[in-house]
Length: 317
Image (cartoon, rainbow, N blue to C red):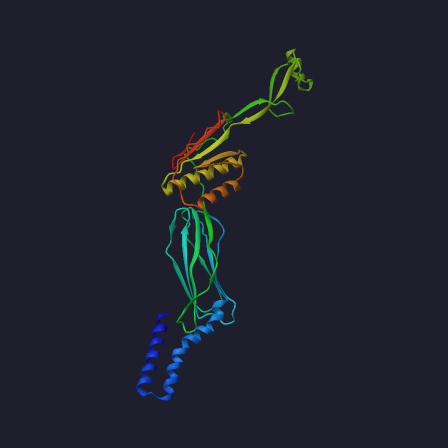
């Protein structure tokens, strides 16, 4: 558009020189025409500008190193499109607080246009795109006219899986113990001698006949020790990434084994029973600036196993 402004100024200067050199009746109207031409172009261009809008549409969440995208949509509802579009878009990772270089999209006049942005997904975090400037130009290409723009659009780069080394045996039989179940039946039983008041339906008649005394088959309730995953949150990004991806691996292992657990992440503590709960929690954390905090784990009593997740060093029980 700078070239068009130079051409217009040159033509206006020639018209003025021609008028002052010859001073004829026609040269007067030629000069007025060139002086009014920008205003006329601006007025004719207003309907297209007032019905134009630039919008951002966020993409689906992806896992690290997968392809993600955000769409920029340009729309003009007037039958004559603007002369040209100029849109400046900013990108920022909300977790790492790193901003990419602003991108300016310039394109000729059209009623609709869709452009995809494919940001770097090698780092965890919520990628936010924002339209910094949205303008169209009048039909002479002299004036930028601001147009409506939508709010920010974003998507989240979620963690991959990193297997801890060493890896804890989360379903170790030593994490289970049994206690008598007062009512009902259970697949687990404990054999003992009859005590006064024991119901007769608990008598193991076959074994009692062999032992020549009454033997009770007492139902046992399985008690699993509570599991707590405690995450170290160092200042270094790559270390935090390692911790979060180890957490995802352990979380999926526990959920697959139908073992609920408690997660300590910085100042936050919550019980996790499904992959969706874990993903929603991590997504919320990746939408805010990275914090460097140490979470040593919170003792919950003797029936709790605490696993401390350390960056690139596996799990410490």
